[in-house]
Length: 357
Image (cartoon, rainbow, N blue to C red; front, side, top):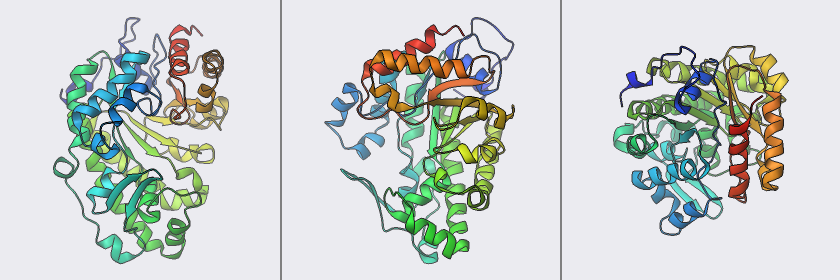
């Protein structure tokens, strides 16, 4: 599939394929049915995924395009989703930049953490074709498996989230070392963000060139910053990253967890779609975005931990809140949680399918 295949004739029609509806919604076009997919839709809550993970480590899975294709297709086949997102992990680029990456029972570990200018300067700029070929190759394998009637998303972590892991060396609640570097040595922090941004642009580009219909940038930790600090340290890189991908002709989706106070920046970043979490009301999001981009979201993933009936009820509430809004993609406000019953995830998808609002 070449990039020209991503160009759709946007004349409104009632017989759009799910792929066409998803791409039309990304472009704020009217669609006959609301597109639906779920962040972290492939993973630990599915027995089929657990069966594969029992045989390989998480990193081995991420570096096996064949297994990534299989895992990507599991929720498509089981839940009947419109959109697939290629299975991978956001921390492959830091490893390619020279950091040691391990996944333990305590989560990802990156060593040695980046704490000073010398460590930033020692990072390696990488060719994604040579150093991180797995996501693109998985996309090439998944493209014929998912078919031309369904959309496929590639993704990467946002510069700030990758920086947080690279400086902390692991997940963090307060980001003490990251913010110490950011406030204490801002020039060093700016350089780190620039290095990550440049490498991430190339990393995402090859995924689109491999056949991804859209690209999502995940900023899991961006909401930990104040509006002022986000404007200073993050927004310039997000704008530059998104601008560097515009020539690809694929929609760019920007997700920030805890984004309520940052939505104005997200809408002004050049992204085609902003993915919002459950903490911001639909009416407020629609007002802030003001037609600058489409909206994706924003059901609380904890609602799926209840019964399928409760999950369906909460799904209908979200659909009602966005009823009549052109340019809406149904999703969760964060990823599917580990203990989510598959029946609840299926109830969400089926409810969106049946929605006539």
